Image 1 (cartoon, helix red, strand yellow):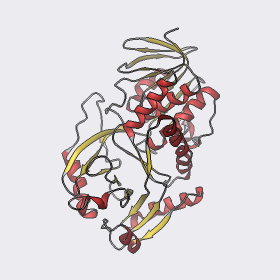
Image 2 (tube, rainbow, N blue to C red; image 1 turned 180 degrees about the vertical axis):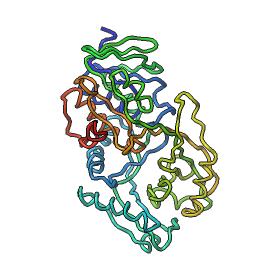
Image 3 (cartoon, rainbow, N blue to C red; image 1 turned 30 degrees about the vertical axis):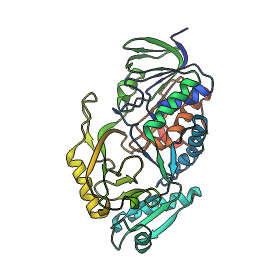
Image 4 (cartoon, helix red, strand yellow; image 1 turned 90 degrees about the horizontal axis):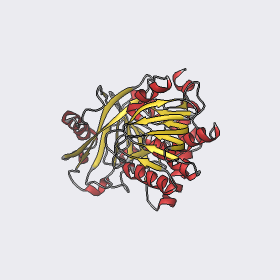
Length: 380
């Protein structure tokens, strides 16, 4: 039957694409539905790069990231595409008020048995002279950090899912979900049935979850990264000499990448938070944000504070505690939901996709997601 499937996946961002990939590899008849085009820039899964790291202040996320690394490598081996580069990463604090955030990262890494090194201000200045953080600086270096190529990863997972037999429908927004056995999914151009359903709707999650009787306390914000041309000696910001970083500071942490495929470093503020009321409105980068990031660079990475270019907007869909939500829809054993990755989910995409596939096929998973199940994360 052309419109009958074993599993339908709604949303072809990183989580949905990964779920479709794992399900197709498991020889399931899968339909992947995407409201835009594959690899689009309207949501949260696009761009040159996303941070990969074990370095979390929560050991549960560190364990999940450790499970994801071999899955990324397996996808690379299967596809012949290089997606994850491990170059090391820094968690930084320039003020004593933020030392506890850095210390918590070290404690979590120690708890899970990951490698790390604590750097005081002199050691940090000697190894990474690009930084200007002052005498109170403290850092944790994690050699297992790096970056994932974002848009390329989504495209590769969708291509591999299709290679294994998945049907992929682009530009086909879902207009209705009718729970049951089978579950029915109605789009602007078709009607489909499946034994099981996975909803990975991102910023559009609540509109889809309403059909299964659920509404999550989600906040959607527009965030932004901007590239900056180094003022001199770009080699000092190449991956061999400049790892990815997270700078714990107020009012919002800063994060960034070395020069990868563009002729500049990429830097942004995490959870800067401009509330999005209209998801259909164009994503227009904010000049004031680019200039605020440049001022940050002038203070802390002066050699990188050159001309800004290619500002890029994306969406964060965030829960109050900034945890994910992955579970069965309440009262349903054939509908699995995955949403609200709160601005730090991409690195886990390949593993969360595996967990989603496991849940719909087996009812349980070995992936470390107990802390983000619906009841754990929201007290439901």
